[in-house]
Picture (cartoon, helix red, strand yellow):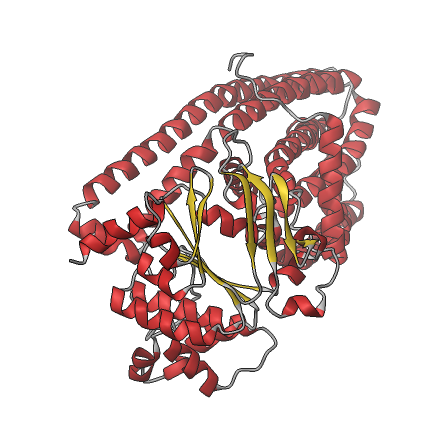
Length: 604
């Protein structure tokens, strides 16, 4: 790995900050688990000393005094000590395993909740999407909070054992301690190299996995079945999937080959270490500088020190450092600003049909330089129904996103009854709006639950829900369903769930919007999947249902504009024309008039 391509690593201070963050989170979520994790490691740390001290005592007694009573005592104490320590360790592990379940899905749940709270702009930002994928990969590779806690517990256990082992070796054979330390230093350097390699490849995986996940999702999603079959897309998707799998596997193979070098060197170092320990202690025993019991104890102590204590301690420290690097993306994602909820409460008059004013509004998407909207000025009167039209890319949907406060304006302001909409709390402000987007989503719940989701705290009787569905053009279909409003949508939770067609789904989405007691209704291409007759019927009903409400429509079918009080034409990143359908259709050389004539030709 060249210095040019070397990734920026976290400083010790940054890692310490991350460690503190995860420890605070663990302590807040489950204090007892953290306590058991560290207290439970004390018996485990003591277990190796049973295998070091008692065999020495037994062997020395066998080779010297050979007192049966003493031998029996040492054997009994060894068995009791081993049993007691292992029982305490197993009990602690049982309590830890039970408690650690609470952390198993904590990070995924917290990320999902965060996704629903962060600024909407982040959900459409490729950098944020990559960070989310990197956070997911980091959780999977590190084990999340579980991994951090387990590593800390390993470090604590290794420290306890190390103190005891060093005390034994330093008293009986300082040279052996120095040699073992040398092996530890080499192991530490090798582990550091492995960690660097692991992090290098980790940073290359997110984009590959994002492509692979997308392809696999399309192959497994029944919703794409018709298009794949009718357009012969299987081969193309399979080819893309195959290439994605090859790219991931190729990177994994490179990582494995890279890591294998350090694994081989580590094996050689360990073999040489074993040879030195046996040779050196053997010479001391032959020279009668140590007893056979000392030989056994020192050999076990040296191996425990080099292979278990220090290697485990340093490896755990370096793995903890690596895991914190992997989890840094999670920490950054969780640090994203959330949509501001603070603000003033809406005045009572705003809960009726309010007055909106776009005052010299310009907007460009984050990390871009081109304005989507420039100096837009528009007033929407209380109870007015306006239709927004224009070519693709003219800024119609962006206009709706700004009205819904999904994005803040870049310049200018949007006023509600003369006050900036940013004055009010987010949840308060969105009480005003009932919206159907182009890419609306229905939930895999019952029809009733989907509708009541929008109703909020307002109680809606079945009669009201049936009426709303009828107004949205879904009444006839609903009457055919044996379970009526209790019919489940899709088959995620319901074996007999209904798969609504595109048009049926749009009708349900419109019905859901009408269930929300909001004074402003926004429909972004609400009837794109419907035929012109069904569209006309829905608009006719909708006019009655939305009496007294402010309504904003985006539509490509200009016939729908005849139902509205005013038509607003977007072109070249701003408002080009505004007026009634009759005024604009008769305007010489007008954009709307040309669009209307072009569509009318298609129906002749």
